[in-house]
Amino acid sequence: MINLEDIEDMTCLSREEIAAIAEHEHLPEVNAAALGEYLMHLHKGPQKVQQMICEDIRDALHRDDLAHARELFATLKHFVAEHPEALRNTG
Image (cartoon, rainbow, N blue to C red; front, side, top):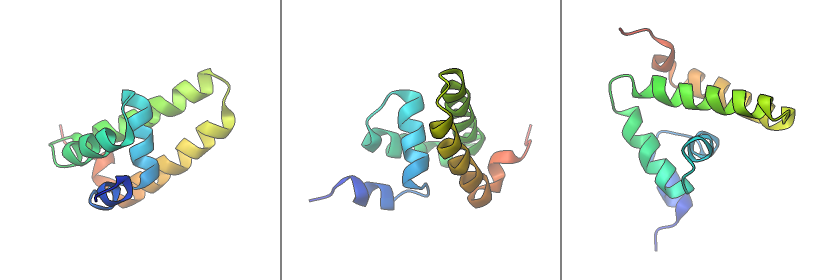
């Protein structure tokens, strides 16, 4: 039987990136994995994922949840290192 880890392993995203999408979109992680994989194949999709993670960081800071903001910042750093196209301004 296929499980969440199997689904996550089929995407180009890390578990932390999928968790950030799930948090942002208020989705179960399995749905967030599918959404994230879909977005990563769209024009400007990586920028959308990057924006979601940034918004999660902002929300954590507004809640004074510095520990979570730090975790999300590490997730963001990993994401842009693995997906530099997320930073390109491809207007």
